[in-house]
Image (tube, rainbow, N blue to C red):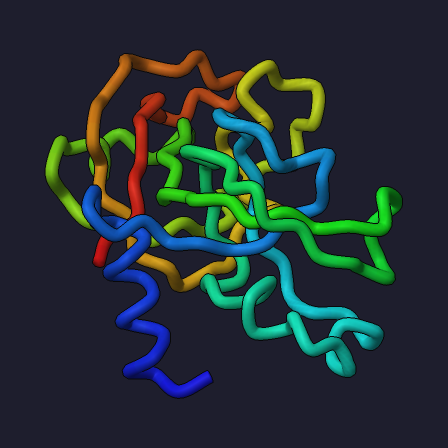
Length: 162
């Protein structure tokens, strides 16, 4: 997909008047469902619906706003069908270094280097399901996180930067 086409789609996904429309498996096609956009598999590359299922940036989190009536056959989904949905970018919570927890600031997420998997904040501080290098805006700072290593970290709500 060309860069200008990608920019256009990202813009639509953030507009109230022109929501992004994509296709999702029936199990995900309900209002409020949040998912991370994947990349096409081998079987998808031969499908005529490829450009409708994978018209959003991979690795980004989206929320279904509404469901349309249109359904199409699909060889990879358990239900055998995909359904048209309107989506918007979804914010999410993360644990970041305290110095980066400034409302309105822009940051990228990196692995903090901690391996304390038993920490109650481990899933907030590690971003295994997101693509690195994407810029986010700190929408809200929620407070301090207790870190067993003594690191100064805060819980923040992030949204995608344009």
